[in-house]
Amino acid sequence: MKDDVTLARWLNNEMDEKELKEFEQSPGYATYSKIKEFSAQLTVPQADMDSLYQKIDARKNRDTVKVRQLNPWLPRIAAMLVLALGAAYFFISTHVTSHFAQNAKRETFLLPDNSQVVLNSGTEAEYKEWNWAANRRIELKGEAYFKVAKGETFDVVTPNGTVTVVGTQFNVKARNGRLDVTCYEGKVRVTTANKEEIILTPGMTVGFANGKNLQLPNEEGDAPGWLEYETSFSKVNLPDVIEELERQYNKTITLKGITPKSPYSGTLPMNDINTALETVGTIYHLQATQTGDTIILTAE
Amino acid sequence: MKTDIPTGICEELTFANFFRSHAKSLRNYLYYKFGNEEQAEDVTQEAFIKLWENCASVPPEKAKSFLYTVANNTTLNQIAHQKVVLEYSKKSNHSHTDTQSPEFIMEEEQFKVKLQNAIAGLSEAQRSAFLLHRIDGKKYHEIAEILGISIKAVEKRIHGALQELRKQIDNIR
Image (cartoon, rainbow over all chains, first blue to last red; front, side):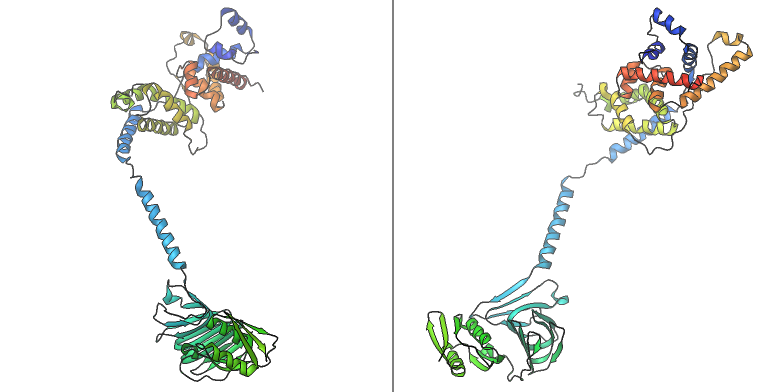
């Protein structure tokens, strides 16, 4: 039995006489012929084909009714809506409102709770309008005056510390690592970058330079001087005073060959550059030379 | 293609006739395959439902092969394969049996039992091919169509099945 289909050919009566004779002599023949004989008598358990057909018939009619195509646009429209809503939510919830006052400019705006904010020259403020009631928070770089609506609270976050307020008027100045806060009405809590907390009452001013309390004297008046273009300085280093003048007048001012010893305290006008320069010049014995937008201050 | 005629397999009568002529073979084949009557009937049902659902796209001459393709592709959460139980037909048409000695009849009965067990012990592929030939009287080319294999492959399976059965019965190891 070299060929692997001979038995199949025999079972199907395809052998010729010679082949058959040969096969009948082979040792397995007796068993094979019995297998052939008895396997033909085998039967399979009968199935109830009529009831099977009825089951199929019932299902095929039910299923034809059930097969109803959805409008293929519906899921697409639904998906688009979900996407659009998601995008809108993301956009609105992360949308940041920013205000910026350029040099020699001021900017006034209202917060969602109608608190008033006045940005001094060269100042940037950012906040989120979304969910303002639960997240009253303004990020400030520069100087601003806040007139907060009664009963409203919020945080002014600066790189040098956080100012928390309750229905009040106050000024925040955060420049070059220094933070000055003056309270004009109500109460203000100042938390410095190294977690020092100070509560201010009206008239009090607090100043920090690089985390150190400068022990500033109380301030007169019921609003910061800069609103009226009469900026007051309290223990401010000369380079910082010069920087403020640059911002207010939008000029480039250079100090030449001077190492200022004492910080400046006093007021300077911000709408009259000649008077301002004269005042500084008198105190520090400086000579001002102006060419275009550049002013050079040299020692007398 | 008879696609212009709106009837085809989709027509109730054609479908019913098609069922009558093919359902039993399919069910038997599935029984040889699964060794379980219930599964055989479930898959038969599934295959005919699939054919009905696709009646518009399956031309009548392709319906049979469609049916077996669906059945072959239907995988079940197989319960443990059960033993294929087959009976011998009661009416034996062998005239000589009643003249034989009781010993001979007993030997015959023993052989029948051995054969039943040996068939149950065949591989699914060999058993399906062998029983389709022996019980359903299918031609090799029909079996080839049902199993989706070549005629040569059917012959190999039948040959292998016979060898295996003899080994089992004669206790050749």
